[in-house]
Length: 438
Ligand code: NDP
Ligand code: HSE
Image (cartoon, rainbow, N blue to C red; front, side, top):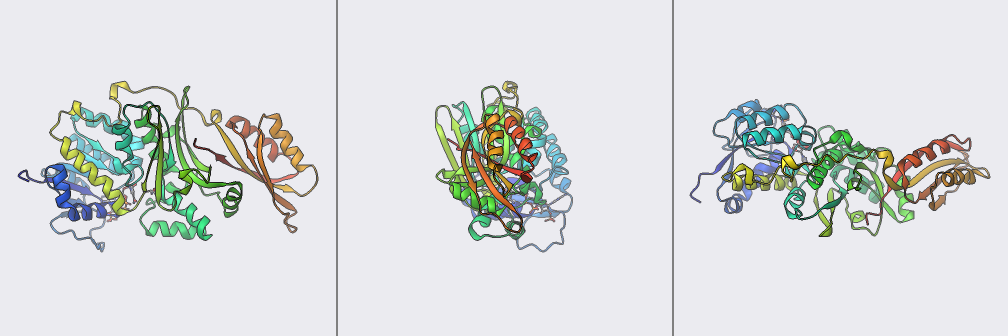
């Protein structure tokens, strides 16, 4: 290759930063053959320069001040792998202001500040690439933004948080305890710096915001995503779901419903026969349904050093290839031309329709089930299945599980409120939404 290598400034030397350095080195020749020139990291920033790192940092200038990397005149592409909002946002905007291209894995930053960042990048004629921000190593951004651009996309749904899927899988397969598995996910580098971001569904909501934007050509609207975490799913729910023929997965669902867009992240019962039900551990899978192509599914590792580095490096190669092209001829950041975004609204959760799994503790006396079914019937909610367990003599209550047919969330809220008010029901009703993903 006769051209000089492209010089990268790396912000962050953690799980993904380390994976990126290793991958760029190990596959340097392959990468240069694809990009048309070499790609080398010349400077990098971390918070604590005294930290012991197993990573070889030979030939890389190190600093504790990330702005030094952004300001380094030799750096042509800034790779932001710090995470969080600040200082990541300020650093990315500073890089853009200096006319540098940016590659980031930071879904929180893109979901919350992407509209501002892409507008700034467009003004300066630079690229901001973010493949690693969604579903780790799966090239889902490229697939939707480029591979499916002839389609009217109807649904994007899937497992987009590796930590949650790892926890739910280990709880079901090994009967492992939630906190123990979460600690394992942290040790393996899957979890966010604050793991409640994973558990509470916020990380998946960041990713869903991005997916919905590139699928439907709508602005990034993180605040409109209905978000529910996996913290209340217990071993008994996993077992009851299994008995009914379902698996519980944390799903992100973005659906074009004609009169609006559904955007929701929540634990979901899906039939065991659906391919997504078989996606286990840290693996992610995204189902994309287009009007022309029909259903397509993308599967791979959703977190971890090298799978994520795979996406970061492919963005670096893409940026290097497109650097000499005119900005107006590049793939738009959010798939659609910035002046052609749709203003279709995001539907409130109350008007979304799904089926439901309901678990409640009924006092063990005659007539209780009749009271519950009367409430459901009055609100037009049909019952698909009921499981009643053996009463616990000590507690004098019996767990009862209902599986309902599809109904508007508004009606289900009303039904749950009325059921909880019954004297014969102890405590609250626990609901998990059910999707067939047909
Ligand atoms: P880590 O916590 O492992 O690494 C973060 C790195 O950033 C560390 O090297 C840290 O320094 C450095 N850092 C933090 N603050 C500063 C600062 N102010 N200035 C300079 N350096 C700083 O995070 P990950 O590598 O796991 O994640 C990085 C990004 O990638 C996040 O946006 C995350 O959401 C995203 N991501 C992560 C995936 C994963 O599997 N881990 C998968 C997909 C995306 P020090 O080492 O000194 O503490
Ligand atoms: N914490 C994230 C996950 C990392 O578990 O999926 C990948 O985005």
